[in-house]
Every structure is written in C-alpha cells, then in structure tokens.
Length: 122
Image (cartoon, rainbow, N blue to C red; front, side, top):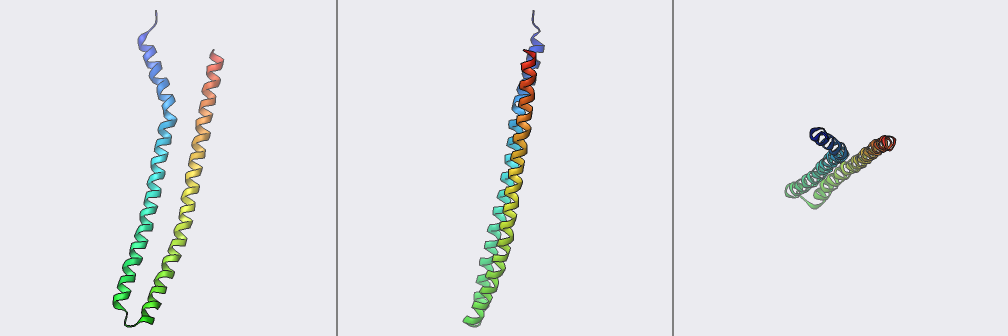
C-alpha cells in the first residue's frame, strides 16, 4: 500500500525543484527590465532638461550670436552626458548578459545533476 501523503509531498517537492529556475529567471528579467526602464527614464529626463534650457536660453538671449553660442554650449554638454549614458548602457547590457549566462550555467548544472541522479536511481 502506498503512502498518499509521502507521494503528495514528493510531487510538491519535485514541482518546486522544476519551477525554481524559472522563478529565478523571472526575477532576473524583472530586475533587468527595471534597470533598463530607469536608464530610459534618465535619458528622457536629460532630453527634457536640454529642451527647457534651450527655451530658457532663447527667451533670455539679447541677439542671435549670443543665442547660438548658448545653444552650442547646451548641445555640447548634452552630448557629453549622452556619451556617458551610452557607456552606462553598455555596462548595463554587459551585466544583463553576465546574469543570463550565470543563470544558464546554474540551471544546466542543476538539470545535469538531477538527470544523473535519476539515471543512477533507475
């Protein structure tokens, strides 16, 4: 006669082991999405600040050469900031790639060890 409680507990434990890598991937995906969303928000904020500063410069300029000079200064500052942002983006992408690679390695190691145990038990 079988023990239904032991079978249910074994089923629950095996289900947890099977879904654990997927849950880790979902958490990794959510964290990565949040980081990229924050990055996009920062870039949009930079552009908004540039636009406001350009409008302010246009309203405060006394003549065209002064306006052009101020706009050039604003554009240079903006492009320098965006250069830094692009480097930050590459860093984020590299970290995300490393996280996914780590997850794949860990999940494949766990799968291999379970498959080996199952083969030995059979």
